[in-house]
Image (cartoon, rainbow, N blue to C red; front, top):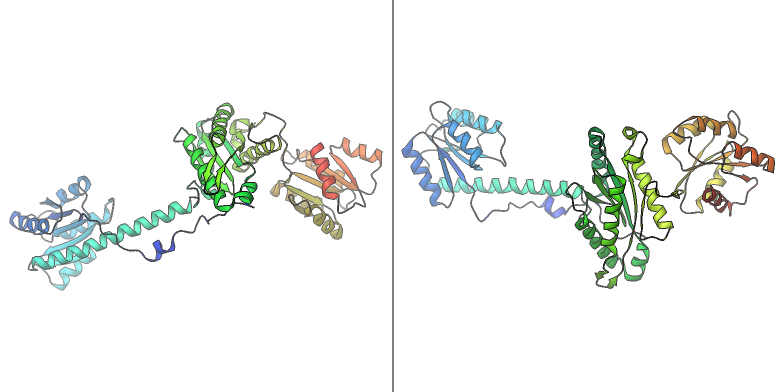
Length: 462
C-alpha cells in the first residue's frame, strides 16, 4: 500500500473562493502628475498627510520615467497638461508593462459627462474634480488602496495555484506532471547542446513494512524527510527532484554522464541511510534503491525519448531491488533483470485468449494485453511496447512463426522476447522454435493455475 497522498491539484479552496484583500500596513506609493507647481504642491501635501509616500512629475514623459524607476501603484494625474495630456498619459500607462496594476485617478476642473467618459475610455479608474474636498480625495485613495490590495491577493492566489499544480502537496517536491513536462524540455536542451543528461529513479526500500509497522503518519514523515535529504544532497541548482508517486522519486541531473551520476547516486543513498528518521512512532531506519540511466547510453542520442530513459532507469532500479536493495545500479553496469510488467498474448481463439488473460492476471504484477491476429498484434506492439509476447503457433493468415519473423525484421520490435504456445510441443518442435529465437515453449492444454509461473520461469531464464 502506498503512503497517503494528497492530490497534486487540490489547492486550499478557501484561498480561492474567499479572496480577502490583504491591506499592507504600509500605504502604497502614489505618483502625482501636474504641470502646475502650486496644484502639485497642494496635492502632494494632502496625500502625504494621509500617510502615503509621494513622488511627483510635472509632465507625461516624466511620469512614465518615474513609473519605471520608482513604481507607484496609484497615479493621480492632471487632465490638462501641455505636450502629453492626462488622457494620452492614461493610454500610455495602460500600454506599458509594470510589476503590478496601476490605479489611475484623473483629476481635472473639466468634469462634464463627455470629459469623464473620455477619461474612463482611455483607461482611468476614477475621475476626480479639482473642486473636490481633501476628505473626498483621501476617501478615494482608500478605495484605490483596496483595489490594489485585491489585485495583489488575486495574483498571489493564481501563483499559489500554479505552484500547487506542479508541486507534491506532502513533500514539497515537484510532482509527476512537472517531471514529465520539464524532463522533455531538459532532453531537448541536451540534444541542442550535445551534452549529456542523467536520470536517477529512487525507491524507498520496504516502505510498505514502514506503513504497516509504524502507521501511515510515520510513513508520511519518512517521505517528507526523505525528500528533504535528497534536495539537501543535490549540490547544483540545475539538479532537481520530483515525486513520481508513492515512495518513488526521480532526480534529474543536467550535463551529467553515467560516471558522474553514479557518484551523485551514492551520495543520495548515503544521505538517506546515514541516520534514522525520527517520527512520532519512533526512529525508523530507511534505505533507498537507485537506478540510473543517461542519454549517453543510447546509440542514437537524438532519438532517445523520455519514456525510454525512464524505462532504462527503472530497469536499473529493479536490478537494485532484486540484488539486495540499498544500492545504486547504473545502466550497463550489469545484465539488468528487466521486470516483466506488460505481456501481449496473441491467439485467434477468443475463449483461449480470455482464459490466458485471466490465468496470467493471477500473477498480480503483469498487465496482460491480447490480440486476435498477426497484423493487429504488430500494430499493438508498436504502440504498447510489451516486455514479452506469447504467441499461439497455429493462427489463420499469419501463424506464430511468421509473426515472430516479422517482429525480428522490425528494429523497434526485434528485441522483444517471445514464447510460443502449441499443442505440438515435441522436442524437435521446441528446438525449431528456439532456433527462431523464441525463449521457450508452453504446451497446450495448459494448467491455468500454473501458467503465470511457467511464463515467469521462462522469462527469468532467458
